Image (cartoon, rainbow, N blue to C red; front, side, top):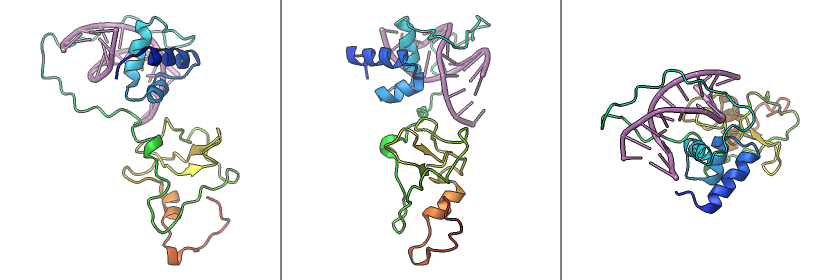
Amino acid sequence: MSWTDERVELLKKLWAEGLSASQIASELGGITRNAVIGKVHRLGLSGRGKTTAQQPKARKPRATNTAPARPRPTRSVGNTALKADYEPAPSPVVVARPAPVHELEIPPEERATILSLNEHRCKWPIGDPTREDFYFCGRHKEAGKPYCDHHADIAYQPVGDRRRDRRSNKD
DNA sequence: CCCTGATTCGC
DNA sequence: GCGAATCAGG
C-alpha cells in the first residue's frame, strides 16, 4: 500500500484525534503501526501532546554493511485476526449467545477491545456489538482456543445435553 | 506479557 | 520516502 493523499489525510485526522499508531494502522489497513509512526514523523506531526520523550542514548550498532544475514521471518502484524476474522462460535450445535452486559462484568483492565484482542485472549463477546461499550472477555486463554476455559464451557455444551447446571445463569 | 511512540538506516 | 527493527518506556 502507498500513502495516497486520502490515506495521508485520514492519518492526519486520526492522529489528531488521538488514536494510537496501531489503531490508525488497523483503520487504514494493510499497514503496520511502524509505517504509521514513520509517516507521522516524516509529516512532522509527531509529539502529540504527551509521549515518552526519548533521550539520545547509545544508538544501536546496526548491521555494518550489506548483511543479508538479517533474519526476518514474516513478521505477523499484531492484531491480524480481528474484525473480519471474528467468529461468534465454532460450535455447530450451540449458539453462544452474548450475555447481557449486566451480571457480566470483566474487570476493565482485563477486557479486550478490538485492539488488544489477540491469540491469547478470550474472544467471548460481551454486550451489544453495535454499542460502544461492547467488549470481549479478553481473559488469558490457551493459545489456539477461541475462548477461555470458562466461556469454552458455555460455548460447547452438547446440544442434547445442554442444560446442565445453569446455576445463576451468569455468563 | 500487553502496549505506547521514537529513532535509525537499509532499501 | 518508506518502514522493519530496535529502543525506551508504561
